[in-house]
Image (cartoon, each protein chain N blue to C red):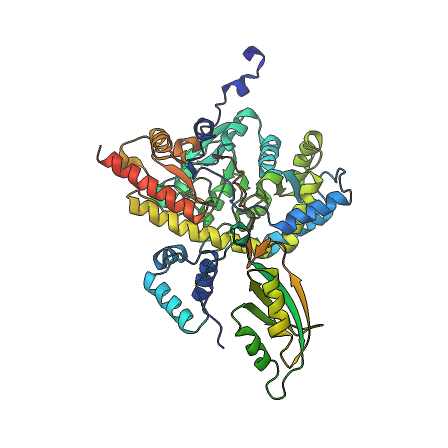
Amino acid sequence: MLSYLAPRVREIQPSGIRKFFDLASGNKDIITLGVGEPDFITPWHVREACVYSLERGYTSYTSNAGTPELREAIAEYLHNGFDLNYDPKDEILVTVGGSEAIDLALRALIEPGDEILVPAPCYISYSPISFIGGGIPVEIETYAKDNFKLKAEHLQAKITPRSKVLILNYPSNPTGGIMTYEDWLPIAKLVEKHDLIVISDEIYAELTYGGKHVSFASLPGMKDRTILVNGFSKAFAMTGWRMGYACGHPELIYAMLKIHQYTVMCAPVMGQVAALEALKNGLEEKDQMVESYNQRRRLIVQGLRDIGLSCHEPQGAFYAFPGIEATGLSSDEFAQRLLLEAKVAAVPGTAFGAGGEGYLRCSYATSVNHINEALDRMGKFVQKLKQG
Amino acid sequence: MKPLSELKLKVLDLLKEDARRSPALLATLLGVTEDEVTEAIAELEEDNVIVKYATVINSGKLDDEKVTALIEVQITPERGRGFEAIAERVYLFPQVKSVYLMSGAYDLLVEVEGRTLKEVASFVSDKLSTLESVLSTKTHFILKKYKQDGIIFEDPEEDRRLMISP
């Protein structure tokens, strides 16, 4: 049947995460640092609001862009939290997770042959989705010595006349790197100079530690050049609800809305009800969750360094990204042996594209006791490697 | 009373979750030195903010299950000393686990624990209702505890997340 497949779909590789998933599944002794989602269950008042709405019979389609109440609440939330101003009428589109928003944005923008710039290591889906749409993903390597920030000179070096879209994801999955206002300014300048359009996936915005998240869209002159992607999964512990949104210039949002209405029609109504409750009454719980991640961040970074692994200070998301090069193993070998010999699951950096070799993504969205146990096992494993 | 420092509040939050956390672990979690944590805890203990490090027990899991009752008590306050004197006379009984002064239809809410129904009943009739200022009592036996002090007694649900996800 392969010959029936579109060549571009045939060519894309399955995610490097898949193999580890198969290895780890079903083994109860394994402690996992491989989970890319919160360990909190969605707060009860949010779940309860959804249950209530089902009892009342809220089971129909909503308007394509999402319910007006939810769009208004998103606009207010972005204004209060991130200094962003979007008109809920025509600048906000509620999507099925941030993932759909990214897909819509790329589909709306890419013409065959366009180059899509992606700082890497990065979330696994940007390059494959760009590629399926006929684009040419161009990864821009970022480095531990820069705390995995995107540097203007590295971006500049990859820009060609065919460059069209720059995909940003700060705070970053998998590195935990963030960008400050000062870090952004030279990037914004290049975006302007080379007439790029930006898709800024800020799904981890709330999970920024020791400072405030700076949205790329809030930079001078960048609002109209940016499609902002965000959602409820990470900040409000709502991954399974699949609730995200895109914000941007009305003409871009309208184009994305057209694709959205022909494909999914609208985001699920029960998810929209829950998301509205999260924004109305869930901000305090969100802050408590962020504080809890921050505590565990300190624990895992300290622990990884004590083991003897190099580890830059991740200032966002819930991942540590230690270097394992000193052990002499490749990321893949290290992760595989760590899983089989020490029963700790983590994801090799190579699953996240260029610059991931030599690193391991360790999620700290798990309990303090699990982190301590995982660190203990990793410590013994690294010790064993050293003794050869 | 001056408000507690941010560090102390965070230490309290973490100890409320698990009182056996070491100062070293608390220090790492909070990004401060171990000395700062030790000092904060010492002051909290000294000021009787941290009263005790007790264990929350799911008595439903024990064979010798005890009987607990919540008793609504109406009293006449004593001239000059209000409710304090009578509250003290009640809480000094070792059977009494907690005593709260309440607003509303009654005055004291008293939690009493005993080995048997009869033991609790006779405490109420012999000791509590015979106190001079007690006007009336209403005894409610607890049938099952679902949650206490923020802790849910049901066996914890397992982690439903995928082992590895992007």
